[in-house]
Amino acid sequence: MNGAGGRREPVTAWPDGWLQIKVPLPFSLRWVNAYLLPEPGGGWTLIDPGLHTEEAVALWEAVLKERRIGFGSIERIVLTHQHPDHYGLAGWFQERSGAPVYMSRAARDYTLRLWGPKRSFETDLNALFKAHGMPDVLREGIAGHLESFVAKVSPKPAVDFIEAGGRIAMNGLDWETIAAPGHARGQLLFYQRESKRIICGDQVLPRITPNIGLVPGPDEESNPLRAFLDHLTELAMYDVKLAFPGHRDPFPNFADRIAELIAHHERRLQEIAAMLAEPLTGYEVCIRLFGARIADDMHHLRFAMAETLAHLVELEAAGAAVRTEQGGVARFRATANIY
Image 1 (cartoon, rainbow, N blue to C red):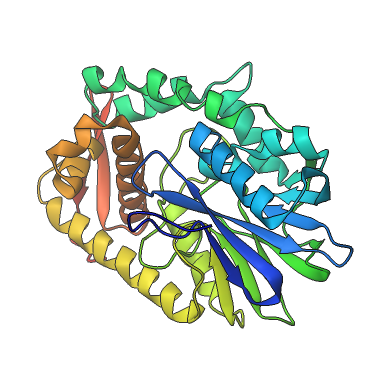
Image 2 (image 1 turned 180 degrees about the vertical axis):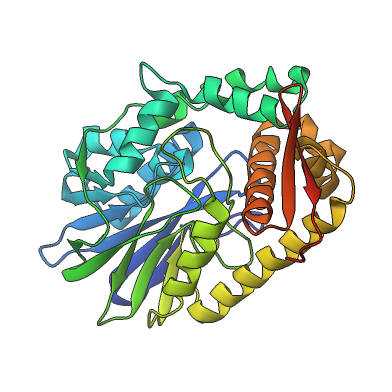
C-alpha cells in the first residue's frame, strides 16, 4: 500500500516474512503496531490488532486484501495486554476468523473491571483522583471518557489464558512468556531465544516512554514504578537482537534503551522531589509537571495524573517524601533524604 501526502506506509515487511501493521489511533500516539507472523502451514499469528475504529477496520480490510490473507488463515490472536489500543479489535477478528484469542487471566479480568457488565473502574478511579486533589469539575469528565472506549473494544472476545513462565508457539517457533509489570495489569512479553527477538508490548518503547501509572484497586501493584524499574533491570539481561514494540518502529540496542528509560525515571523522580519543599497534592504536582493545559483533555490528564502518582508513591517508599492527609486529600512533602 502506498501512502499519500507524506503519510507513513501502513505496512512494513521485516525478515522472515513478518509484517508490521501501523493501525491508526485517534489520539496523539497516531498508531499502534500490530504484527502478522507467518506460520509453517500458510496461516498467520496476529499480535495486538489495534483499536476498533472505522479507520482501523478500513485499513485492515485493505491490507488483508492486498496481501491476499483471508480471515480464515489467522490461526491465533495474541495480546500483550488489555489496553484498548491493543485489545480493541480482538473480538472483531475472532468473529471473522474463528481464531482463539490469548492473553493473561489478569489482563482479561482487568477488561471486566473496565468494560464488563459490573464494571467498577470509573468509581474507583474517581475516588483515587479525588483523594489526590483533582477538582470535582474535572473528575466529572472521567465517566464519559471511559464510556467512550466501550464501542472501541467491542465485541469482546472469548479468551484462552496464557501466563508468564510458560511458552507459546508462534511463527513456527517456541516463545517464552515473560511477566511485565508496571504499565498494564497482566502484560506479557514474548521472547524467542534462538532468533533473539522479543515482542515487548508497551514495556520498552523507542523514542517515547511507556506510561507507568498508579491505578485503583485492591489487587493492583502498590508501587508500579518500582515494579517497572526492577523488571527493566531483569529484562536488560536478555540477549535481544531485535525488539518489536507496541509503538514506534522495531529497534536493536534493547539494553541501551532500557538504560535510557531507567535514567529518565530517575531524573523525573529527582525533579518531583525538588518540587516538594512545600506540601503538594498529586494534582498540583501533575499540573507543575505537565502544564495547566493538560487539564483540558481528560484522556491525557488521566494518564498524566496516574503517572504523577506512581512517582510520588515511589518517592514515599524510598523515604524521600512523606504523605499527610487533611480533609480526605493527601499531600506529599520532601524529607531530608535525597532520592
